[in-house]
Image: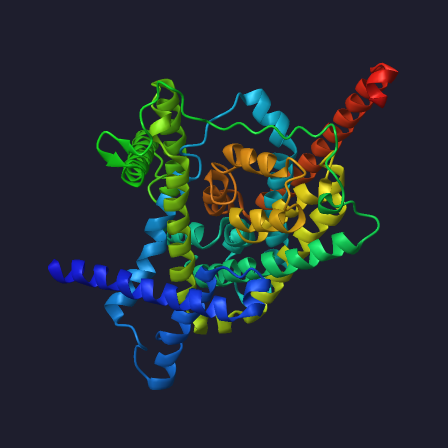
Length: 473
């Protein structure tokens, strides 16, 4: 037992050294910095090069890392995804539902349409190419959304589901796609931003002053005179207290999953027996936050500390997932990898340049590029895109994009719908699943266009109704 604990501790120490080396590489490399490649991605490739898939292949051994260390790293993403998901909404003050929808509704529709389209496109490609030509499982119909919108952690968390439905081979392909997605999200996103800045047909906020009608008020919870000091909570530091709340959130998720398993088992179904934990930890975080607000101790859930711990978990997921990839599996599936990646990028670019301008009433490109970043990489990639196109925060895109996470995170991009995709393909068949997701994506787009048109007309009528002196002021 002590040996296992020692192996675990040593693996974390070595991981820290790999991360430090990656940080130095990024600092010394201007191209990597200019492309905003995350340190965790660089560290993952360093780990891959120094491990059994790199140095190990040349030397015929395990590389520079022991099998015990590598085994810990391979297991970490499946555990850290629960921490990351629990941190997504914990500590976020929840606004009234009407206000939440008013600010983030267009983002919710755009994000959901992107995910629906990813399911549909992967389903079509699987039926026409991957299944008949490459012998892929029909569960590959969920692969683009799981890999690009979901990411490394989602795939790690869904490993038991893929195994249950005889689709374990898709795991390495999915991890490869998730890695490609992080790179394409930055590279292609940067190309889109540069195109928008130079295009005479796209108005970019960084080149124009903010609109006088833009509502940039952002709610922040500030400590009041009656609040207890934020530096300590009941003898604990902020980081310790936040760790406690994250643990409680994960515990609530475990209880919820157990309840679902017992309830479905009583009905004669084993549907949730292999269902992953991480979607329930998102709900657990929300329930803990609601309890904190209800019983007036939300000040103790320090959002900055929670985000720091969630960021640590995310970086751990990325570096370990990339570093433990199987290059032989990726090499054997290079054709499907290229096809799926190209299809995903093409769909996201189409959504940004063609559809998004009809979904967002103002500053459509800034809002759309955030959604592009997340559809290819993760939430952080979306914020990187926003920093490129609107560094002075002339728009309310940060607030809309952030608030939409409250609605969509439990569902898509690693939420319940993502986790349900493979079981639904098994239950319905891929043709029906593809049709349902394609229709859902189309209906969402039509709804978003109609909603934007109605809001634009209402705003125009309101301006027309103002007295002339108020308009000219």
